Amino acid sequence: MIKYDIKDMPLSVHGAPFWKEEKTLRRLPRELMEELPHLSFFGRRCPGARVRFKTDSKNIRIRFEFEKADPDAGMSMFACLAANVLIGDEKYGEFLGIICPPHCGETVADGILEKSGNMDSVTIHLPRNEVIKSFEIYIDEGAQILPPDPYKYEKPVVFYGSSITEGGCCCNIINAYASILSRHLSFDYINLGFSGNAKGEPQMAEFIKGLDMSVFVYDYDHNAYSPELLKATHEPFFKVIRKANPDLPVIMMTRPKNNYTQEEKQRREIVKSTYLNAVESGDKNVCFIDGETFFGKADGNSCLIDGLHPNDLGFHRMAEKIEPLLKEILER
Image (cartoon, rainbow, N blue to C red; front, top):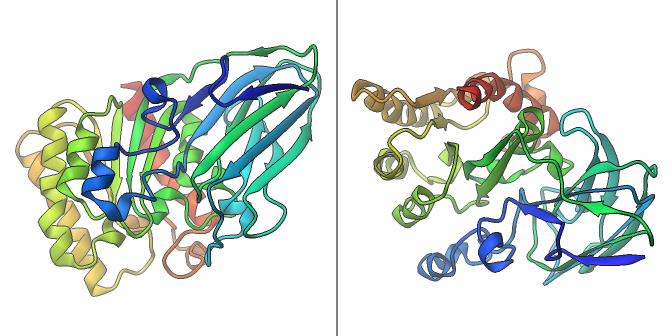
């Protein structure tokens, strides 16, 4: 078989903001990780990163290695340590399979997936949880490999938030709500979810404001450890983004859950006040989604795996709620 390193053309890497300049799978600048050391690990792992190409190879071998591989109490190996492979159309394509280390704690995954000999679009969704040390793709001798078809919307949507934004706790990383939305609407995206560590830091806002993005979606309600911290950070965070990007569409969301407690209702009002203050100031590019409306009444209590993180049903219902709004924004 013919080997391609992830850095080789015509493979196209998405969801890693520094890839074009540095060929590095990380989400945050080194300076920011030094300034905010609690993000040093999270900034180097790449949930939402994808490798895309087209090939008529009948076999695709994928081999990758992590720096380390720790178990995740809330997610299986298939959810957090596996590469997911889709072929064909972004929305209606085929799930070809996963490549995963054979046992928990092992750092190397190596496997072959079979497909037809047709020229197919291939998207490999990289593992969520760990820092990737190397990533290689092999195709059959004599097979072609071509650049991928472009996304309909190539300027990425940027998502910032908690472990929910990052994809916890779906059974496959492709079922995270940002991934579902990207496939349904054909847009590139950057996932800046930081499990337990999205706290609305001013330094993070300064970084995000400089990204070239089509829409900004933020939802870090869970990681602001108190309503007071949420109130102290949420509107200032938005204002940093808005000052640098006066026409950027911004979507604000609260935590996904049915039947808010009194504290959760208080948090909702804090987020909503950021939205209402922007509207009152004449901002026409800001939207608000109430997280208590995500799941609906029928089986709404079946949408969370632990009372906090959505399962696959929960993520799909989130995507269903967000999709019409995001579609309208992108088309506009």
